[in-house]
Length: 271
Image (cartoon, rainbow, N blue to C red):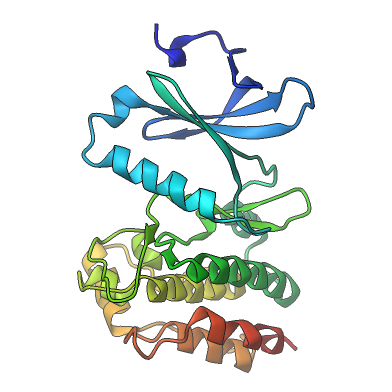
């Protein structure tokens, strides 16, 4: 029997596994408690057999673990430890109980300026820390932004992230189409950090409008709009916010604002 097939109350390390809170391509995410302290964690279980069916997955998982071990920030999900068995890899991670920011937006519709300011500052703060380590997240979207009990943001899901260094370029197209930058959907080479800036611009727009700037039924039509940078800017958005969105959604990645450049302007975006 593999580890995955054991009783529901199985232990891994010092943790007692509870119910399933998520399902990924290679296994489940379970809620678990430390057997002594009762501290709750999320345990991502990666089944080696399932992983072996996909090319380069092992390398990607190792990269995700390496990246998460590097990052220590209040707005980035924590990886506490990794436990390996012959059948599975267990990633013991911080558990946040507030769900996805995506569901929060769906429930609330358009966010207030105060909510937008708070969430967006936290996201930018976390992304700035990621970029400081020359890491590109490459899949920033409200589904990958989690909330804790106090509704503070945690950036999660580093499965598509990559380490970038000066002079090296990425060419793999990844991330969600609606949040993907023009250079990504065009299949061009890109350095990394600038694609996260574009995604942040899309997220800011979604917060303030309750919908996406680029949204089409067909992928070719969607990609055409993204490549041209064509979107509608509603009049209710405050002028400084419009300016920041425009600077984040510049089609030419070399002219696009950087995260450190955008950070100081956020407090002034909201009256």
